[in-house]
Image 1 (cartoon, rainbow, N blue to C red):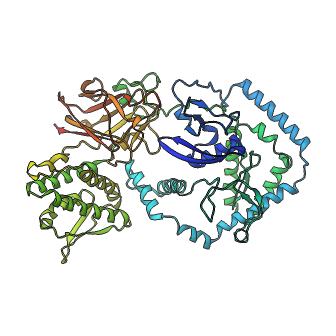
Image 2 (cartoon, rainbow, N blue to C red; image 1 turned 120 degrees about the vertical axis):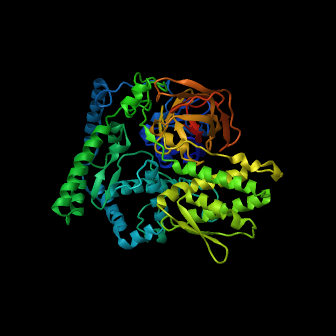
Image 3 (tube, rainbow, N blue to C red; image 1 turned 135 degrees about the vertical axis):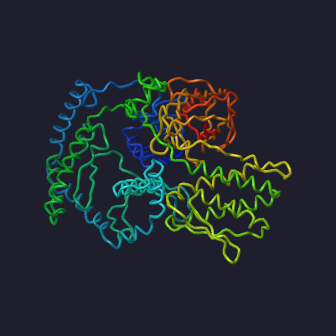
Length: 632
């Protein structure tokens, strides 16, 4: 037994992974799945030093502790592409696999006793435990641990970013479930070698044990002491509606798993699960039974199909062929599928719902302009901005449906004078303020709470940026407060990109004004593009643009790019700006680029040619893109 601590990198994140190497490669992949949500059969785990692929034959006790996980879409462009047939593999490969299954099934029939008793006892033991989750008292206790209000807000905001401000109930429910899953994955982590309850130190595998009294109280019958079973054989899913054999969902090597399923025959397994399922559904109406039986048939067909998919992590999946055909033709981008070329995109056209970002930038620019004109000292300006920052924090932590907070004057003699300007900031976030007799400003919702939920993180980032980046000087006479002058930001356009990372790295994330979000192009390190069309094709005189570095992975920052404009919606292009060997020294760093040659345009295209370190990874990312200009 060798217990090791690996450091797994995936999508710019690092995951500490404590692992007993005796448990084998298959268990390792399931552990990685719990951390990253990448299914085991879609994983490629490589050693960072030398880029060597980790397989079942690798010595996990001797390999480097620095690993990198690649999913299907992360496979480098030079990786071989598997040629898949209708069933996911060639007829010859499928025939060999089916023959291997027949042989494994025959061997199983020879080795298995055929008795149902042992298998049925194992399954039935867990059914009552699962049904405990249907207890209304336990369900209510569980719900109290879930931040429902926060998850609902995130789900509605995600819909609003796609333009759905009045979603249907089905849309709300679906998105809420997705956000709930994301919350669950962030809140609960895999534990392989838990720390000692007494000293907090490292523990060791001790095999199986007898449950403690406190564990028996909650239904424990067998206790696994800090270890997993080494090989997958049976994976039975249990719900209030029945029990299901879902082993095939977790393997592409069904013939190998069959050779280990020796408790009983497959026929007995099917009969036992069917009998228990009928018992679970004994009180169901005919309508519910019909729905469940249809679902069962669909799931069985899916499992039978998926088990014969190509077992090749380098499989290249086709992108979605979406987006307005007329637009693609007009831009001469309807043609070959060469990766990252200007003639292909697997992304849909997305609309930027970012008008609130423009209003917030303008409102804070007006606030700083007012402070500068009033001769406000830097310390006084910081005091005011910090008070606004506290107000925004109080609003963010309050219920999104009933937001309310107070802004205190903090003894500032300029407070009453700047209230009208602060009201402009509040209005940009669908908020309103009323001065109370005690000289506090009471702030509450004035419109759609989702508009406020969209705007609050943007405004908070702006305040933090103004203070942290010191958009002011010790000499108030130099009007340095005007350094955050962000008027005439272009918004509400449509965006198309060469590629994007779902669900959080989509192209419009570059325009949402939130520093922690970003556009990610999985294969853009050596070339990718993003096209922006103005709303209603309005001609715009672009004056400058800003790029902001993303939250992590400096090696993915853009280094070389060309910005082009078009006066005819993308039929022809001209160069507006070219940049080489650019470097962002900090995370969330903004860089402003002036347009020297101004030509009126209604479409803009960024051609990012190279990232900071294109030799060591394949991804491109940018935290923010802001375009500033005058509509003509």
